[in-house]
Every structure is written in C-alpha cells, then in structure tokens.
Amino acid sequence: MGLRDFTLSDVIERNAQLHGDRLAFVADGERVSHRDYALRVARLAAGLAGIGLVAGDRVAVLAQNCLAYVDLYGAAARLGVILVPVNWRLSAEEIAYVITDTTPKAIVAGAEYLPIIDGARARLPFVERYFSLGAASGVFGAFADLARSGAAGTPAAEIASDSGFVIIHTAAVGGRPRGALLSHAGLLAANLQLALSWNLSAQDVHLGVLPLFHASGLGLLLAVQQAGGATVVLPRFDPQAVLQAIGAEKVSVFAEFPPMLGTLLDTAAKDGGDLASLRHLTGLDTPDTIKRFESVCPSARFWTAYGQSEVSGVVTLAPFRDKPGSAGKPTLLNRVCVVDDLDRPLAVGESGEIVVRGPMVFNGYWNCDADNTFTFRNGWHHTGDMGRFDDDGYLWYGGRTPAKELIKPGGENVYPAEVEKALLEHPGIAEAVVFGVPDAQWGEAIKAVCVCRPGQTVAAAELIEFVGARIARFKRPKHVVFCAALPKTPQGLPDRARVKQEFANG
Image 1 (cartoon, helix red, strand yellow):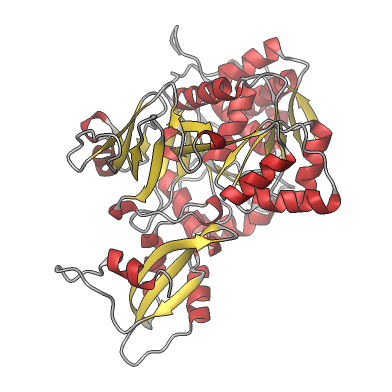
Image 2 (spheres, one colour; image 1 turned 90 degrees about the vertical axis):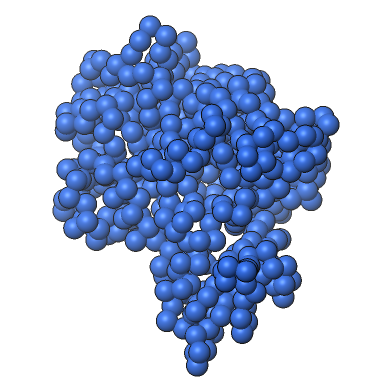
C-alpha cells in the first residue's frame, strides 16, 4: 500500500475512528456498531490468514444476505483477497461453472446450499477449505470458528487501491457468464458520486434487500457505509419485513427491482406502514409505479440511472422527474460518450454504442484476455449498450447492441445466447431465437421462437421446464411460440430483427 492508496478496508477503520458508537449493521437479530464491525472484520481476516489465504486469493460465497456475508466482504478488503459472490438463483451446473472459473481456495456456503457444493466437489480440486454458515457438516467446517480463531491485532494487508476486490459474474454473452473484476478504487469512486448526489451522511440508513451477489446490492451498502451510515440487512425481499424495517429503523435509501416497489406499496396500503423516512430510491420500474410512490412519499425522490457491473455502479443519474424516460446525466467522475461502429463520437440525437472512461471502469473480465482487448479498444470501455444524448445532456437508453442483446426480467440479466443454448439441447428443437418482451409484473419477460425438428412435436410447457432444469429458473422463457421456419439473413443465419418484428406480439 502506497502513500496515496486508500481502500475499502480504510473506510472501515475510518468509520471505527469517527463513528465508532454509531450503528453500522442490523442483521440476524444483531445490532453492530462501526467499532464492533471493525473488530469483527479484523478477527475474521486473521482467521482467513490463519488457513493460508493471502492477497489475491479468491474466496467464493454462496449464501443469502446475512451478517456473516457482510463480515466476509470486510475481511476480504482487509486481507486483500478477492471475494466471488455466487448467485444462489443459478442452477447447480451454473454455480459449479462460476466457481471453477475463479478457482477459489475456500468456499463459504449457507446451510441450504451445502448439497450443491458437496455435489460439485469432484470438479473443485483447487478448493482447500469448505465452510458452512451453520453448524459444521462433513467436509464443511463452521465458518464462525474462523473469526474465533483470529487475532484482532493482526495488521491489514498492504494492497494498492486499484487491486481487485470482488468478481461479479455478468450475464452470458456466448452461453457462459464472465466474471467482472471490480477494484477498491472503482467502488470507492462509485460511492463518492452517490454520496454527493444523494447527500448521504452518517444519519442515513440503507435497506439491504437486494442480494449481495448483485452489484446494486453491494454498491449501495458500500456507499452508505463510506458515508458513515448503517445498513439493515434482510435475507431477501418480503414486503411485511421491509415495511417493518423501514418504520423501525427509519430507512432513508434503498434500491429495488420490479415488482418490489409495487408490492411494497400494495402491502402498505393494505396493512398500513410508515414510509415517511424514505429520501431516495432507485431501480428499474414503470412510470405508473413511480407515480404511486411519489404520491405516498411526496418528499422522497426516485432516481433513474444507467450503469452495469463493469462500471462499478452507475455512470448517469438524475431524479426521474427531471426528464422521465431518460437515464440521467453523466456523473462527476466519468466520461460517457456515444460512438459509431468506428468509435467516432456521434452528434446529439444520434444513436450509437455507449462507451465509458474513468476510475469506475472495472479491471477486466477474469481469464478473458481476448474479450478485454475488444471491450477496452481505443481507450474506452464498450458497454454493449445503445443510447443517444439529447440537447440537455441526458442519456436515453436504446437497448443492447445486436451482439449483446440483454433481457432483464425483474432486474436480473439474461442474454438470449444462454437461453438459446439450453433450448437447442432439447432433442426436438432445431432452431431458436430468444428476445425480451414487455411484462407488467417483471418489467420484461423472455420469449422464445422455436422450430421443431422434422417429425417432432414439443409442448411449450415441456420446453419451459426443460430450460428451467438446465439453467436458472428465472432464465426460463415465459412465452414460447413455434413456427415452420425462421426468417434468415443472406448468410443463412436467423434474422433476429425480423423474428422480433414478426413474433413480438404473436
């Protein structure tokens, strides 16, 4: 660590010094101050070091939100190891792939996920230690024993601020997810921008309901932590639990994905609930739901934004009401541009690929040198998203580039390629094209247009369940239609644009 380095571990130590007695986390029935959190993190980091982990090693975690998860993030920052949070909504095969992709030396799993990890152990010869967040079981030691075995006086590791901190696997462009390596510096820059835009302080309380394997769930927790505030950690979204937490802890900020906000408003209207403490919300939601939220919480703001895991958070941001439908304006620490196929900047109003430059850009995809060369070409991070700027400097999102078309059911990222790959594994399917369609509940739903092999007949329900048995169930098509043949390009490939045009409403 150099003279000018500052890491997420320094945030924890700074908070212990300046806000020691203030609340840092509420989770699992415990209330932890910033001073106590620093001690918990130091002990756990020492315990991890005691089993041979050093800076740069990876630790995978497969669990729902809990205090131990938060401790593990802090200990990773202190020790310099890289955390690999695994999406528990993935299938067992996808979970095994994410773990083998990053070769962690240790795996930490919630009790409900031990069978998945145990079933994959033959494929994980690089894993040296397994831990359970519950009681010890078989090869799984008790994670709680790690913290008890560590000495709080062990010094923090000397690491640079641009060192990797977390690998978040993004949706699969070519059928397999890629791990985006986010640095301490990138996340700290994201935190500062949000803290400034929302005037975050030690008085703020964040509702940590988005999963900690998600960049949004982690990012807002870190931003409020850097401001000296607190986070109420919930294992998953439950409207009654959320209402109770908002009223009891005076929650001021949180991020959501549909249908969370609509469900919360429905529950509050039915059962009653105090939402008056809310100041700022962000997420993906419909104008009607946002309007309902504004009528219930007139002093709060709903913020619109554009971002992705690869940029450590959001790079455009603005209150929704400033310009409804836009993705906001570029934030203070980023250059955001729209370019043509030759990376030439486009004029106001012209649509092209969104590219980003600045300290929030990730370190690269894990073990994907060719992808990194392509993504970072000409000194910009190429997002794979389309957009345009208007005369006032607001970005208008225009969907994905043809190579990276993305579907977002309920805030999750799904690439058509991974669903199409699963569909084509069915012996009765010859061709398939997958795309997103509007959905009132989830924002967007997955639709598949399929061609059966000669002499074969496949029921839509059967095909949906077939896909759900191979990849995460949230990636299953909600709608399946069949046709005799797909429209083709001159090269003989499925013409995706024509498929969408012909079958979007059919």
